[in-house]
Image 1: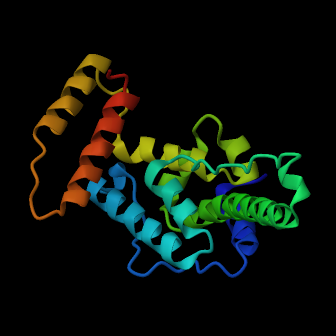
Image 2: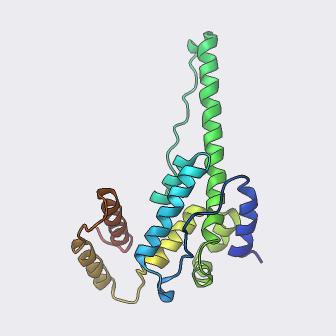
Image 3: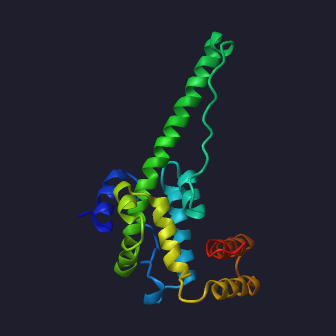
Length: 206
C-alpha cells in the first residue's frame, strides 16, 4: 500500500539535483504536539526561501509555497502568417515556445519534489492526520503538493468543528482585529494578516 512516507522517497529521487536540506528547518508538529502557528509560518518561510533561492524555477515554486496555488504562466500566442515570413520572428517565437515548455515542465517537477520536501519534514502524527483526510490517496499517488499544502494548513490552523461554526468565525475575526505589528517588518505583518484572513474565509466567513 502506498503511504506518504514511501512516496516521499520516490519523489526525492525525482527531484534530481534539487537541494533538499533546508538550513534551520525544524520538524513541523501538529497543534496536539505543541506546534504553533508561528512555528508553522517559520516552516513555510524557510521552505519558500530555500526553494526560491536553490531550485531551478525558484520564483514559480516559491509562489506555490506562499500562495498555495500554481502561478499563471502565459502561453505564447501562435505566430501569424505575416510573422512567419520573417526568419527572425520565427526564431524568436520558437525560443518563446521553448522557454514556456521548459518553465512549465520545471514547475510540474518542482511541485512533485516539493511534496517530498514537505513530507520529509513533518512529524509522524501530522502525517497520520494527513493520511486520514479525504483525497489523500489520489494526491499521494501523484505527489500533489498543492493538495498537501492545503491539508497541512487545515491541520495547523486548527479550524476544526469543535465549536459551533458561528463561534469559530467570531473567534477568528477577534484574532484578526487584535493583531498588532510588533517587531515584524511590514512584509511579515502583511503576510500574517493575509494568512489569518484566509483562515477566516476558509471557515466560511465572507
